Length: 361
Image (cartoon, rainbow, N blue to C red; front, side, top):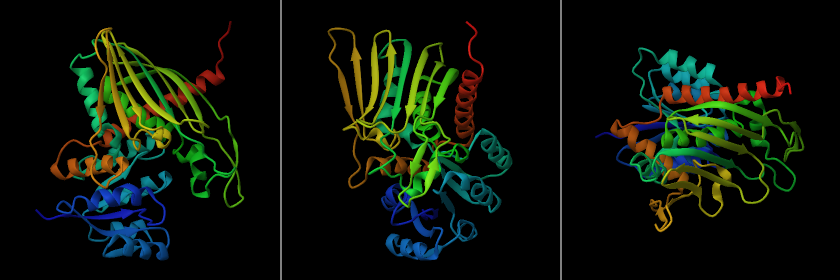
């Protein structure tokens, strides 16, 4: 079997999600993939990344990489640039793996789906949290009836402080712009809600409310930034079978950033939570633990996630998608992305109605 030739757009060796996850994941699968090309926004950083990662080619444009001889294009840049790069990959006949959020909203996601109609373009979306072994084990226990019938669900996705020494990193400042589609709701919330649907099935939004409690920032370069994306999102939903659920998603938790999903059943509770408080980066990155509590008299069950030697949990999660993709197994697809983007847009719409249409009492 010939290894698939891969090119990564956004593979900056100094600081990037690709360097943290995609590169080590690919390097751990030498028989399946070959990292042959990298692209960054500057020739200097592209050349440095080529040398650091052992790639054959370096490009200072993602579009140039797409036109190269690689088989699989990985898109790991800022969300506002995803759509045009995906469209270019589709037009060029390339396979693609795009990070989540796929695009900025459900309208753009639907546009990608239309452009894929009738075209054989194998693809994957970076919703890797659903394949974490802890999540898979929890889903198995719930579907097998271990905790009886699902009664309700509770979701907390609280990321850590967005500033250090009173400053926000300049590279992260775009995430507080609502138009960018890369805020707490889309990223941390999107990954968490995707996992919820793997555990209890499709969910419907009942109500939501949002707030931007920390609107003003100064970046590390001294630039003033006004946040328009919400940093707090709370709401209710209904899961398959009628079980209600609540969610709370927010950025900037000062002490103890935390991720927790609890599914309460008639015979017990399944809880997924981060280990050592590392959930501040998001469920898709955190080391997770699973606890199953049952009726009085039954001992709690704990499940430890197996570790892949020399890989972080985040890289292991990405590696799982690459393995599935290579074998033709199920990976998150454009249909999954359209659904999740639509769910997020429904939360925004519901929150807007709450804000503009107060109850008459």
